[in-house]
Each structure stands twice: as C-alpha cells, then as structure tokens.
Length: 430
Image (cartoon, rainbow, N blue to C red):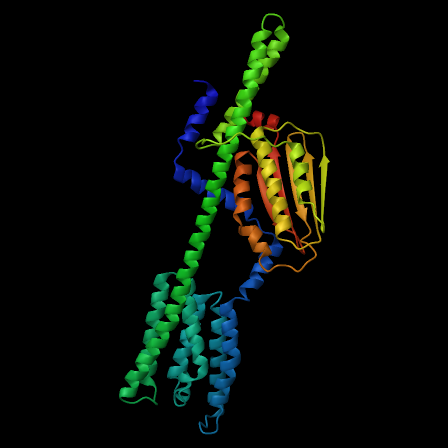
C-alpha cells in the first residue's frame, strides 16, 4: 500500500460524531468573528429588550402611583415613614431593571426590600408591602426563572411562597379568612410570574437548539457538495493521468525526456487527487461538471453587476498554481460573499473584490459599503448567523485556508479568504 493511501484510511475511519462536533466548533468560531463595533451594538441591544421596556413601563406607571398613595391625607404617615418608603419603592424598580443583567443579585436585593416593607412597623401600619410598586418584585422573580438554572428558579419560587406567607400573616389589614384568601392570591401571583419566566426560558432553549441543528445541517449539506466536487476533481485528475500515461508509453523508447515529463504529470495528478480525497468522508455519485478557474471569479463579478451596483475586481501579484479543491473553495467563498453583499444591502452599493497573490497562496477580499438605502435592523445578524458562510468556511478550512467575516464601521462587511498555493500545500504535506 502506498504511503498516500495509508494516510487516507484513518481519516475515513474517524467517528462521524467527532467529525461533526469538530466541524461545528471550528466553523462557528471562524465565521462569528465580531469587531468592537458589533459588541458595542449588542450591548446597547441588551438594554432595548422587551423585558427592559416592561420594567421601565412599570417604573414610570407604578412608582408615581405608590408615591401618590403614601402621601394621601387619610393615611397620615409621618415624614420619616415617607422618607424611608419612597427609596424602598424606587429600589424595587431598580432591582427589576438590574435583574435583566444580574438576576440573582437583583432577586436578593428585591427580597430584602420586600422584607423591609413587610416588617418595618411604621411602613407595616400603612400596608406598604401591598403598594403598586411591589409588582416589580414579580418581574425580578420572572427574570430568575428565565435566565438562571432550574434549581435556582425553584429556590426563588420557594422564597416567593415564603414571602407570600409572611405578608399574608403579618399584614394588619388582613383578618380571619381574608388572610388565607390573600395568601392564596399572593401565591398565585408569585407562581404566575415564575411560570412565565420558565416558559420563556424553555422557548429560548428550543430556539437555540433549532439554530444549532440548522448550523449542523448546513455543514453536513456542504460536505455533500464537497463530496460531489471531489468526484469532479478525481475524475479530472484521472483523465489527465490516463492521457499522460498514454503519451509516456508511446514515447518511452523514442523520447525519454518527454516520456519522463509525462510520468511526472501523472505522479503529481495522482497526489493532488489523493489530497482532495482526504477531505471526504464518503464519495457519492454526482454528475461531472466543469471545474472553476481564476477566470470564473471575473464571471462572478460580472454576474452581480446591475443598475445601482458598482462592482470592481483588482488582481495583484503573479498567479500561483492552486489545487483543484483550493480553487473550488476560492470560487465558492467569493460567490457567497458577493451574494450576501447584494442580498443584504439597498442600492446604490459599491462592492470591491481583490485577489492578492503572495507567492505562497492567494488572499481574496470582498468588501461592500453597506449600500445607501436604510439600514435593515436584521442585516448584521443575518450575515453573522446565516448558514451560507458557515458552509463556505468549512470548505475553506478543509482546503487549508482561513475565512473571516467582519462588520465595517459605520456599515458594510468585509469577507477575507486566505488559501495556500499548490507548492505551499505540497511542502506542508511533506
């Protein structure tokens, strides 16, 4: 058995689960590279979530209502009670906002405030724990059920039930059967807040599982496309090998130099075919098709030109021979980047494509200016989490290259692909 074939067998026998897990980690790490601008935008987005807006609405509506209630003439609380109660109400609302980021600490603070409202004698006399601002405590409890592990959510629920009992059986305004009715009502409110948070947590987990399954499915689909392309590569290489072998046999006695050259082409073609075969788990049947070339990049650029879209192609340096699988990875990466640039922008848009030959490989960069139309709210997330670039990044990785996608400031994207030349890949393999 030749050395090339011996190195091929262990790759084909690798466990499928390990292969998919590695592919998922490496592909997602490659594609989802974020700039400081992206992270800053995500931090601002955290403060614009629906739960933050709800907490702000509760603050704006219920805090003034609590202040108006405690200052009513019929209650006649003293100044010290008002000075103590109002900061406690404000603290409850502050905890409901803090719970969107630090739920456990916020819940501890909210529980302490509720205990103070229920047990401080002067506030207890005016039933301060039942004022409108106490609803903020339920928001904090819901955040714990939403963001924390189930065991912490259950502990928070137990704490809420204990607080309901404390309020029902220490509140001076409750008497006899009313205490039990209040106790059951408070337990119902606490349980409802916890249940809403738990259901939202379950929904979030299901969404994440669907996203992960979508990524894994995209990688598997891309591997199937790679297998079909490798079928074309091997078929092409075998055709060249057969033709050159016939030339070598015909010239073996009459022209030894040309015969030796033809045999050298046979050897190199066979090695290239084996290198391509290493990246496949299994090769299925597929129709033969033409392999892309550098000229195909220019055809891709021409294909996306349209009214309102200015697309340029620049090439620098002396071209380096590329293996067939590397050429396929380059073609697919440029095509996907151009597709995203056109799909996620509003014209007029400018797209620049550059190919830089370094002697050891090629670097392709596709940059767009984001278009002049209105910025779509989901444009950044679509490019960052879509499965197109994840599949392409897997193809680039298997070809020995690196793909990165980064958002530009103030708008637009840059997709960069670095791929090795045939000589560099051959040197690293040896």
